[in-house]
Length: 82
Image 1 (cartoon, rainbow, N blue to C red):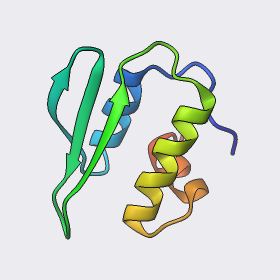
Image 2: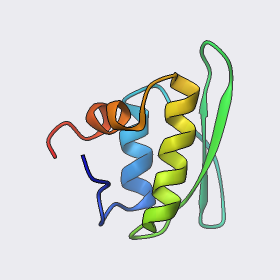
Image 3: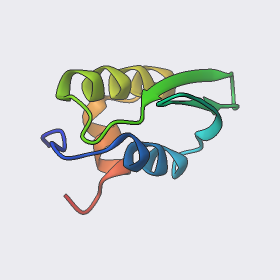
């Protein structure tokens, strides 16, 4: 599955909410999301439209590593319709 090319930071935050991440704060144009269980994990997402592909890939890689799944599995969980 390819990375979405027109995904905004807000859309990514909404998709990550499905798997347990919650927005904890916003500073300027950056959102901070936190995952609480089993261990805390924090990520920062630029609230840009669209996100750069490299930035999106790095964020998804970090989330996939925290969840101990592959990036492809994460993409299927977040964007099942694509």
